[in-house]
Length: 352
Image 1 (cartoon, rainbow, N blue to C red):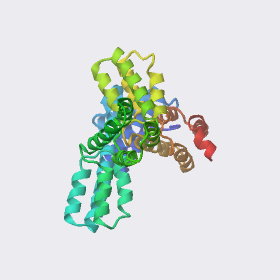
Image 2 (image 1 turned 60 degrees about the vertical axis):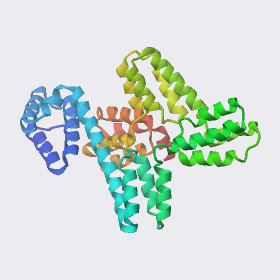
Image 3 (image 1 turned 30 degrees about the horizontal axis):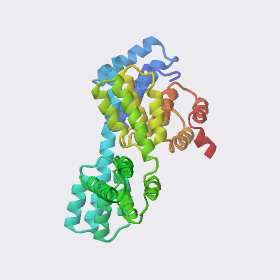
Image 4 (image 1 turned 45 degrees about the vertical axis):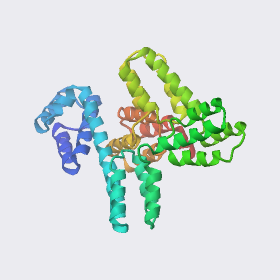
Protein backbone atom coordinates (compact mmCIF):
# COMPACT_ATOMS: atom_id res chain seq x y z
CA UNK A 1 0.00 0.00 0.00
CA UNK A 2 3.01 2.27 -0.31
CA UNK A 3 2.22 5.67 -1.92
CA UNK A 4 -1.47 4.77 -2.09
CA UNK A 5 -4.00 7.63 -2.02
CA UNK A 6 -7.62 7.58 -0.89
CA UNK A 7 -8.84 7.77 -4.50
CA UNK A 8 -6.50 5.00 -5.62
CA UNK A 9 -7.60 2.66 -2.82
CA UNK A 10 -11.28 3.39 -3.48
CA UNK A 11 -10.72 2.60 -7.15
CA UNK A 12 -9.00 -0.69 -6.22
CA UNK A 13 -12.04 -1.74 -4.19
CA UNK A 14 -14.40 -0.81 -7.03
CA UNK A 15 -12.35 -2.99 -9.40
CA UNK A 16 -12.45 -5.90 -6.94
CA UNK A 17 -16.25 -5.63 -6.89
CA UNK A 18 -16.48 -5.30 -10.67
CA UNK A 19 -14.32 -8.31 -11.51
CA UNK A 20 -15.23 -10.72 -8.68
CA UNK A 21 -18.39 -12.52 -7.63
CA UNK A 22 -20.06 -11.46 -4.38
CA UNK A 23 -18.56 -14.07 -2.02
CA UNK A 24 -15.06 -13.42 -3.34
CA UNK A 25 -15.59 -9.64 -3.13
CA UNK A 26 -16.66 -9.93 0.53
CA UNK A 27 -13.51 -11.89 1.32
CA UNK A 28 -11.34 -9.40 -0.52
CA UNK A 29 -13.01 -6.50 1.28
CA UNK A 30 -12.36 -8.18 4.64
CA UNK A 31 -8.70 -8.74 3.86
CA UNK A 32 -8.42 -5.21 2.44
CA UNK A 33 -9.70 -3.81 5.72
CA UNK A 34 -7.29 -6.00 7.70
CA UNK A 35 -4.30 -4.84 5.66
CA UNK A 36 -5.49 -1.21 5.84
CA UNK A 37 -5.51 -1.41 9.62
CA UNK A 38 -2.00 -2.87 9.78
CA UNK A 39 -0.16 -0.82 7.19
CA UNK A 40 2.17 1.91 8.39
CA UNK A 41 2.55 3.63 5.01
CA UNK A 42 -0.87 5.36 5.15
CA UNK A 43 -1.72 8.08 7.65
CA UNK A 44 -4.50 7.64 10.18
CA UNK A 45 -6.34 10.53 8.54
CA UNK A 46 -6.32 8.79 5.14
CA UNK A 47 -7.33 5.49 6.75
CA UNK A 48 -10.35 7.22 8.27
CA UNK A 49 -11.27 8.77 4.89
CA UNK A 50 -11.12 5.47 3.00
CA UNK A 51 -13.22 3.77 5.68
CA UNK A 52 -15.83 6.52 5.37
CA UNK A 53 -15.91 6.01 1.59
CA UNK A 54 -16.33 2.25 2.01
CA UNK A 55 -19.12 2.70 4.55
CA UNK A 56 -21.04 4.93 2.12
CA UNK A 57 -20.52 2.75 -0.94
CA UNK A 58 -20.83 -0.75 0.57
CA UNK A 59 -23.66 -1.29 3.12
CA UNK A 60 -22.57 -3.59 5.92
CA UNK A 61 -18.92 -2.55 5.82
CA UNK A 62 -19.29 -0.71 9.14
CA UNK A 63 -20.50 -3.89 10.85
CA UNK A 64 -17.48 -6.03 10.14
CA UNK A 65 -15.16 -3.01 10.52
CA UNK A 66 -16.32 -2.53 14.11
CA UNK A 67 -16.97 -6.09 15.20
CA UNK A 68 -14.35 -8.88 14.82
CA UNK A 69 -17.00 -11.48 15.68
CA UNK A 70 -19.09 -10.44 12.68
CA UNK A 71 -15.95 -10.55 10.51
CA UNK A 72 -15.45 -14.16 11.60
CA UNK A 73 -19.12 -15.00 11.00
CA UNK A 74 -18.98 -13.58 7.47
CA UNK A 75 -15.88 -15.59 6.60
CA UNK A 76 -17.30 -18.75 8.15
CA UNK A 77 -20.54 -18.25 6.25
CA UNK A 78 -18.66 -17.83 2.99
CA UNK A 79 -16.64 -20.99 3.68
CA UNK A 80 -19.75 -23.02 4.37
CA UNK A 81 -21.60 -21.48 1.44
CA UNK A 82 -18.79 -22.32 -0.97
CA UNK A 83 -18.57 -25.83 0.44
CA UNK A 84 -22.29 -26.35 -0.10
CA UNK A 85 -21.89 -25.06 -3.64
CA UNK A 86 -19.00 -27.47 -4.30
CA UNK A 87 -21.01 -30.41 -2.95
CA UNK A 88 -23.93 -29.52 -5.20
CA UNK A 89 -21.57 -29.19 -8.16
CA UNK A 90 -20.21 -32.72 -7.63
CA UNK A 91 -23.72 -34.11 -7.18
CA UNK A 92 -24.81 -32.42 -10.42
CA UNK A 93 -21.78 -33.88 -12.25
CA UNK A 94 -22.65 -37.37 -11.00
CA UNK A 95 -26.24 -37.03 -12.18
CA UNK A 96 -25.17 -35.66 -15.58
CA UNK A 97 -22.99 -38.72 -16.16
CA UNK A 98 -25.63 -41.18 -14.99
CA UNK A 99 -28.41 -39.54 -17.03
CA UNK A 100 -26.31 -39.69 -20.17
CA UNK A 101 -25.36 -43.38 -19.83
CA UNK A 102 -27.90 -45.33 -17.79
CA UNK A 103 -31.62 -46.00 -17.43
CA UNK A 104 -34.15 -43.85 -15.55
CA UNK A 105 -34.48 -46.27 -12.57
CA UNK A 106 -30.71 -46.17 -12.03
CA UNK A 107 -30.72 -42.36 -12.30
CA UNK A 108 -33.51 -42.17 -9.71
CA UNK A 109 -31.68 -44.49 -7.31
CA UNK A 110 -28.41 -42.59 -7.63
CA UNK A 111 -30.18 -39.26 -7.14
CA UNK A 112 -32.02 -40.52 -4.06
CA UNK A 113 -28.84 -41.93 -2.54
CA UNK A 114 -26.46 -39.00 -3.07
CA UNK A 115 -28.93 -36.18 -2.27
CA UNK A 116 -28.54 -36.38 1.55
CA UNK A 117 -24.75 -36.79 1.44
CA UNK A 118 -22.58 -33.87 2.59
CA UNK A 119 -19.38 -35.91 2.60
CA UNK A 120 -17.42 -34.25 -0.17
CA UNK A 121 -14.67 -36.89 -0.23
CA UNK A 122 -17.18 -39.74 -0.62
CA UNK A 123 -18.89 -37.88 -3.46
CA UNK A 124 -15.57 -37.20 -5.20
CA UNK A 125 -14.50 -40.84 -4.85
CA UNK A 126 -17.84 -42.04 -6.22
CA UNK A 127 -17.54 -39.65 -9.18
CA UNK A 128 -14.01 -40.86 -10.01
CA UNK A 129 -15.09 -44.51 -9.92
CA UNK A 130 -18.34 -43.84 -11.80
CA UNK A 131 -16.68 -42.55 -14.97
CA UNK A 132 -15.02 -45.96 -15.48
CA UNK A 133 -18.26 -47.97 -15.37
CA UNK A 134 -20.47 -48.99 -18.25
CA UNK A 135 -22.69 -51.62 -16.61
CA UNK A 136 -25.77 -50.67 -14.53
CA UNK A 137 -25.21 -53.45 -11.99
CA UNK A 138 -21.69 -52.16 -11.38
CA UNK A 139 -23.10 -48.68 -10.77
CA UNK A 140 -25.61 -49.99 -8.23
CA UNK A 141 -22.90 -52.05 -6.51
CA UNK A 142 -20.65 -48.97 -6.30
CA UNK A 143 -23.57 -46.97 -4.93
CA UNK A 144 -24.19 -49.50 -2.16
CA UNK A 145 -20.49 -49.66 -1.32
CA UNK A 146 -20.01 -45.87 -1.26
CA UNK A 147 -23.26 -44.88 0.44
CA UNK A 148 -24.50 -47.73 2.66
CA UNK A 149 -28.19 -47.54 3.51
CA UNK A 150 -29.21 -46.59 7.05
CA UNK A 151 -29.08 -49.77 9.12
CA UNK A 152 -26.83 -51.61 6.67
CA UNK A 153 -23.72 -50.99 8.77
CA UNK A 154 -25.56 -52.07 11.90
CA UNK A 155 -26.77 -55.24 10.16
CA UNK A 156 -23.20 -56.13 9.13
CA UNK A 157 -21.97 -55.54 12.69
CA UNK A 158 -24.76 -57.73 14.11
CA UNK A 159 -23.90 -60.57 11.69
CA UNK A 160 -20.29 -60.45 12.87
CA UNK A 161 -21.26 -60.47 16.54
CA UNK A 162 -23.68 -63.34 15.91
CA UNK A 163 -20.88 -65.48 14.50
CA UNK A 164 -18.36 -64.51 17.19
CA UNK A 165 -20.81 -65.04 20.07
CA UNK A 166 -21.80 -68.48 18.78
CA UNK A 167 -18.24 -69.73 18.24
CA UNK A 168 -15.98 -67.99 20.74
CA UNK A 169 -15.80 -66.86 24.37
CA UNK A 170 -17.54 -63.73 25.75
CA UNK A 171 -14.15 -62.09 26.20
CA UNK A 172 -13.33 -62.40 22.49
CA UNK A 173 -16.85 -61.28 21.56
CA UNK A 174 -16.41 -58.15 23.70
CA UNK A 175 -13.11 -57.26 22.03
CA UNK A 176 -14.56 -57.74 18.56
CA UNK A 177 -17.57 -55.61 19.49
CA UNK A 178 -15.29 -52.82 20.70
CA UNK A 179 -13.28 -52.98 17.47
CA UNK A 180 -16.24 -52.78 15.07
CA UNK A 181 -18.55 -50.45 17.04
CA UNK A 182 -17.33 -47.21 15.43
CA UNK A 183 -16.64 -48.66 11.97
CA UNK A 184 -18.93 -47.35 9.21
CA UNK A 185 -17.25 -49.12 6.28
CA UNK A 186 -19.62 -51.89 5.13
CA UNK A 187 -17.07 -53.35 2.74
CA UNK A 188 -14.49 -53.66 5.52
CA UNK A 189 -17.07 -55.24 7.85
CA UNK A 190 -18.16 -57.73 5.18
CA UNK A 191 -14.56 -58.70 4.47
CA UNK A 192 -13.99 -59.34 8.17
CA UNK A 193 -17.21 -61.39 8.30
CA UNK A 194 -16.08 -63.56 5.37
CA UNK A 195 -12.63 -64.15 6.84
CA UNK A 196 -14.10 -64.91 10.24
CA UNK A 197 -15.58 -68.16 8.93
CA UNK A 198 -12.08 -69.43 8.14
CA UNK A 199 -10.96 -68.99 11.74
CA UNK A 200 -11.39 -71.91 14.15
CA UNK A 201 -9.13 -70.90 17.04
CA UNK A 202 -9.80 -68.00 19.41
CA UNK A 203 -6.14 -67.02 19.24
CA UNK A 204 -6.58 -66.28 15.53
CA UNK A 205 -9.54 -63.91 15.99
CA UNK A 206 -7.69 -61.01 17.59
CA UNK A 207 -4.88 -60.90 14.99
CA UNK A 208 -7.63 -60.81 12.35
CA UNK A 209 -9.27 -57.89 14.18
CA UNK A 210 -5.98 -55.98 14.20
CA UNK A 211 -5.45 -56.76 10.52
CA UNK A 212 -8.94 -55.63 9.42
CA UNK A 213 -9.44 -52.81 11.95
CA UNK A 214 -5.95 -51.47 12.69
CA UNK A 215 -5.60 -49.48 15.90
CA UNK A 216 -9.36 -49.58 16.50
CA UNK A 217 -8.89 -50.51 20.17
CA UNK A 218 -6.32 -47.77 20.67
CA UNK A 219 -8.56 -45.25 18.91
CA UNK A 220 -11.45 -46.19 21.16
CA UNK A 221 -9.30 -45.85 24.29
CA UNK A 222 -8.09 -42.36 23.34
CA UNK A 223 -11.63 -41.29 22.43
CA UNK A 224 -12.91 -42.55 25.78
CA UNK A 225 -10.19 -40.66 27.68
CA UNK A 226 -11.04 -37.45 25.81
CA UNK A 227 -14.73 -37.80 26.63
CA UNK A 228 -13.99 -38.60 30.28
CA UNK A 229 -11.98 -35.39 30.64
CA UNK A 230 -14.52 -33.25 28.81
CA UNK A 231 -17.41 -34.74 30.80
CA UNK A 232 -15.65 -33.92 34.07
CA UNK A 233 -14.98 -30.26 33.25
CA UNK A 234 -17.49 -28.95 30.73
CA UNK A 235 -21.20 -28.75 29.95
CA UNK A 236 -23.22 -31.53 28.24
CA UNK A 237 -23.49 -29.36 25.11
CA UNK A 238 -19.69 -29.21 24.77
CA UNK A 239 -19.41 -32.94 25.49
CA UNK A 240 -21.92 -33.65 22.71
CA UNK A 241 -19.99 -31.52 20.19
CA UNK A 242 -16.67 -33.12 21.11
CA UNK A 243 -18.18 -36.60 20.85
CA UNK A 244 -19.66 -35.84 17.43
CA UNK A 245 -16.32 -34.46 16.18
CA UNK A 246 -14.07 -37.31 17.37
CA UNK A 247 -16.40 -40.26 16.69
CA UNK A 248 -15.50 -40.69 12.98
CA UNK A 249 -11.75 -40.26 13.54
CA UNK A 250 -9.54 -43.34 13.26
CA UNK A 251 -6.34 -41.27 13.40
CA UNK A 252 -4.68 -41.88 16.78
CA UNK A 253 -2.10 -39.17 16.10
CA UNK A 254 -4.85 -36.62 15.54
CA UNK A 255 -6.74 -37.78 18.64
CA UNK A 256 -3.62 -37.74 20.85
CA UNK A 257 -2.71 -34.23 19.66
CA UNK A 258 -6.20 -33.07 20.60
CA UNK A 259 -5.91 -34.79 23.98
CA UNK A 260 -2.56 -33.14 24.77
CA UNK A 261 -3.87 -29.69 23.89
CA UNK A 262 -7.11 -30.30 25.79
CA UNK A 263 -5.23 -30.47 29.11
CA UNK A 264 -5.13 -27.08 30.76
CA UNK A 265 -8.10 -25.58 28.91
CA UNK A 266 -10.63 -23.98 31.26
CA UNK A 267 -12.89 -22.11 28.85
CA UNK A 268 -15.55 -23.89 26.79
CA UNK A 269 -15.01 -21.61 23.80
CA UNK A 270 -11.33 -22.62 23.76
CA UNK A 271 -12.37 -26.29 23.69
CA UNK A 272 -14.75 -25.72 20.77
CA UNK A 273 -12.07 -23.76 18.93
CA UNK A 274 -9.65 -26.65 19.45
CA UNK A 275 -12.27 -29.11 18.14
CA UNK A 276 -12.68 -27.04 14.97
CA UNK A 277 -8.90 -26.80 14.58
CA UNK A 278 -8.14 -30.52 15.08
CA UNK A 279 -11.20 -32.00 13.35
CA UNK A 280 -12.06 -29.67 10.46
CA UNK A 281 -15.27 -30.22 8.53
CA UNK A 282 -15.03 -32.07 5.18
CA UNK A 283 -13.74 -29.61 2.61
CA UNK A 284 -12.72 -26.97 5.17
CA UNK A 285 -9.02 -27.57 4.54
CA UNK A 286 -9.50 -27.03 0.80
CA UNK A 287 -11.47 -23.84 1.47
CA UNK A 288 -8.71 -22.50 3.77
CA UNK A 289 -6.08 -23.26 1.14
CA UNK A 290 -8.14 -21.34 -1.43
CA UNK A 291 -8.46 -18.38 0.93
CA UNK A 292 -4.69 -18.30 1.38
CA UNK A 293 -4.12 -18.37 -2.38
CA UNK A 294 -6.74 -15.66 -2.92
CA UNK A 295 -4.91 -13.30 -0.57
CA UNK A 296 -1.44 -14.15 -1.89
CA UNK A 297 -2.56 -13.65 -5.51
CA UNK A 298 -3.81 -10.13 -4.67
CA UNK A 299 -0.63 -9.05 -2.93
CA UNK A 300 2.28 -10.86 -4.56
CA UNK A 301 3.67 -12.09 -7.88
CA UNK A 302 2.56 -15.27 -9.74
CA UNK A 303 5.91 -16.89 -8.87
CA UNK A 304 5.25 -16.49 -5.14
CA UNK A 305 1.67 -17.74 -5.60
CA UNK A 306 3.01 -20.86 -7.32
CA UNK A 307 5.51 -21.58 -4.52
CA UNK A 308 2.87 -21.07 -1.82
CA UNK A 309 0.45 -23.33 -3.67
CA UNK A 310 3.08 -26.05 -3.96
CA UNK A 311 3.91 -25.79 -0.25
CA UNK A 312 0.36 -25.82 1.14
CA UNK A 313 -1.21 -28.35 -1.25
CA UNK A 314 -0.14 -31.51 0.67
CA UNK A 315 -0.97 -30.08 4.10
CA UNK A 316 -3.91 -31.59 6.00
CA UNK A 317 -3.04 -29.68 9.19
CA UNK A 318 -5.72 -27.05 9.79
CA UNK A 319 -3.72 -25.37 12.55
CA UNK A 320 -0.67 -25.12 10.29
CA UNK A 321 -2.71 -23.54 7.48
CA UNK A 322 -4.47 -21.06 9.77
CA UNK A 323 -1.15 -20.03 11.34
CA UNK A 324 0.34 -19.39 7.91
CA UNK A 325 -2.75 -17.40 6.90
CA UNK A 326 -2.50 -15.21 10.02
CA UNK A 327 1.23 -14.60 9.71
CA UNK A 328 1.31 -13.88 5.99
CA UNK A 329 -1.17 -11.03 6.49
CA UNK A 330 1.53 -9.26 8.53
CA UNK A 331 4.11 -9.52 5.74
CA UNK A 332 4.68 -6.96 3.01
CA UNK A 333 7.75 -8.36 1.25
CA UNK A 334 7.79 -11.43 -1.01
CA UNK A 335 11.05 -12.64 0.52
CA UNK A 336 9.41 -12.71 3.96
CA UNK A 337 6.61 -14.92 2.60
CA UNK A 338 9.07 -17.33 1.02
CA UNK A 339 11.07 -17.44 4.27
CA UNK A 340 7.88 -18.28 6.20
CA UNK A 341 7.08 -21.32 4.02
CA UNK A 342 9.89 -23.66 5.19
CA UNK A 343 9.19 -22.69 8.81
CA UNK A 344 5.56 -23.84 8.69
CA UNK A 345 5.71 -26.45 5.90
CA UNK A 346 9.13 -28.11 6.32
CA UNK A 347 8.07 -31.40 4.72
CA UNK A 348 7.03 -29.76 1.47
CA UNK A 349 10.34 -27.93 1.27
CA UNK A 350 12.28 -31.16 1.83
CA UNK A 351 10.28 -32.80 -0.96
CA UNK A 352 11.44 -30.07 -3.34
